[in-house]
Amino acid sequence: MVLVTELHGFERFESAPQLMAYLGLTPSEYSSGGSRKQGSITKAGNSHVRRILVEAAWNYRHPPRVGAGLTKRRVGQSPATIETADKAMRRLHKRWTSMSWRKMPGQKIAVAGARELVGFVWAALSRTPTPSELSSSQTKNRKPAKKATKKRESQTKRRKSAVAA
Image (cartoon, rainbow, N blue to C red; front, side):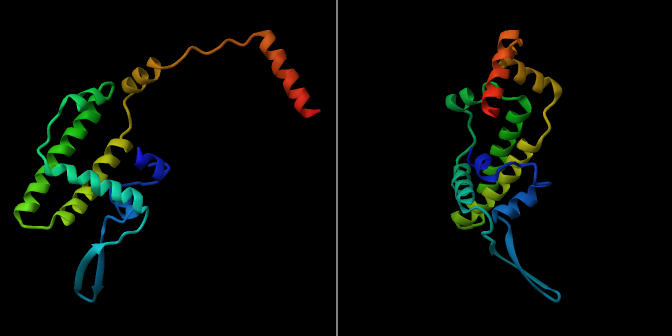
């Protein structure tokens, strides 16, 4: 929810690396001639979103499990979204364990996990829903449209004329 409210639309990001760079989760680079060195993250963009993502990435040090609470939250989600989420859980945990086996510090692993998590979030939100997904989600909660009546039309005309006067 924080991502959606803070970024004001994912449509402006054409690729996941573009979103990662916007959030400041890409490594800085020092280049001169033939040498190229990568430094710490650039810390550009929204620090609040970056902090939330790093905190979320700490969760992937635990093995992926689908408990009762997660099962309840998944009700109504498309199978493709659930599959993307499961793939993200497995991959991010595997990455966490492989980096910790190489004795990397936890903070560095969490930032790397946050960067990869952004890629999964971008993939899930930029995916175009299928027509069947659209029709099922739109018709479930939609109320029938009100029919225009002569009485309502005359009320609307009176309001408009009162405002204009």
